[in-house]
Length: 71
Image 1 (cartoon, rainbow, N blue to C red):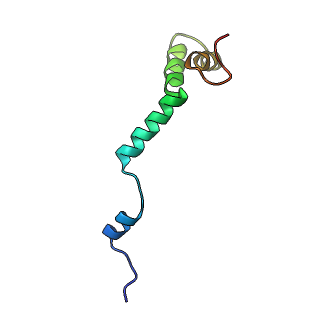
Image 2 (cartoon, one colour):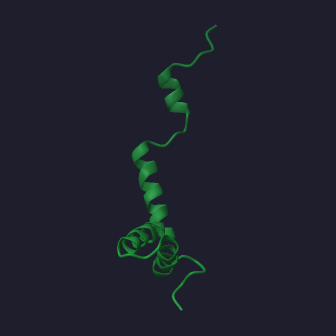
Image 3 (cartoon, one colour):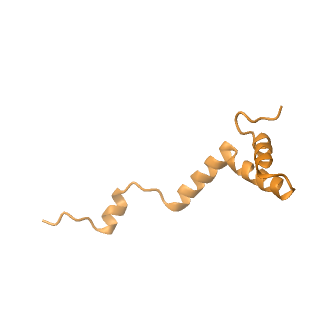
């Protein structure tokens, strides 16, 4: 008796998610948490001459990161 699965059998039983769906889910999670806005704002702040730490704090405030909201 052969107990090994074929590639087709493993694929159908793996329960895996296709890469496109996984990528879209990851992008949605990043957008919902404000991570995308944070990194975009951080990059712009650094490009405009702010040091890395100050740029990160300011990006967190403008992206709505919890605990770093604008005063």
